[in-house]
Image (cartoon, rainbow, N blue to C red):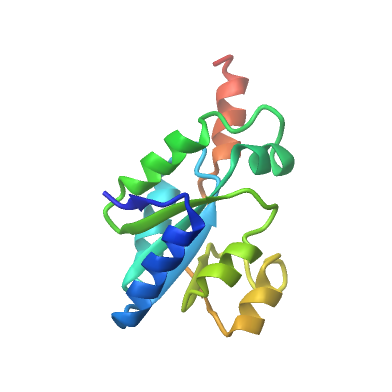
Amino acid sequence: MARIIIDRQELRREVDDLRAAGKKIVFTNGAFDIIHVGHVRYLYGAAAEGDVLVVGVNSDESIKRYKSEDRPLQPLEARMEIVAAFQPVGIVTPFGEPTCDALLEFIRPDVMCKGPEYGPHNLPEYPTVQRLGIRLATVGGPKENSSTELIRKLQEHGL
C-alpha cells in the first residue's frame, strides 16, 4: 500500500530521497470521491509515466468549494486510503487549496498527468507546470466516467 503523507516536511524528505535515488516523479491530483473504472485506468496510466506516482487528494473543503456543499460523499481520510490501496500509487497527500499549484511548487515533479479533457488551454495549473519545466502528460481514455455523473444517475433513481 502507498504511503499516506500529511506532514509537508515528511513529504519533502521523501521526495528529496526519491529524487536523490534518480527516480522520475509523476504527480496527479483529484477528488477521488467515488472511485470508478476511469480512476483505475487513469492511475495506472499516470504511474506508467515514471517511477513513483504521487497523488494529491483534494480536501473536503476544497471539494465543497468547486463541486457542491453536498460533496464529498466520503471524508478525506477514507478517500486517501482508497487511493493508496492502488498498486501503482507510491504516495498520497492532501491539499486544501483550490488548485494544486502550491503542491506542484513543493514537489516539483518531473511529470504532471491529467485526463484528456485537460490541456494547456484549460488546466488552471498550466502556468506553474510550464514555469517549472514539468512535462504535462495526458493519460486515461475519454471521460466516459464521472463521479458527478454517477451521483446524478443515482439521484434520478431515488437512491
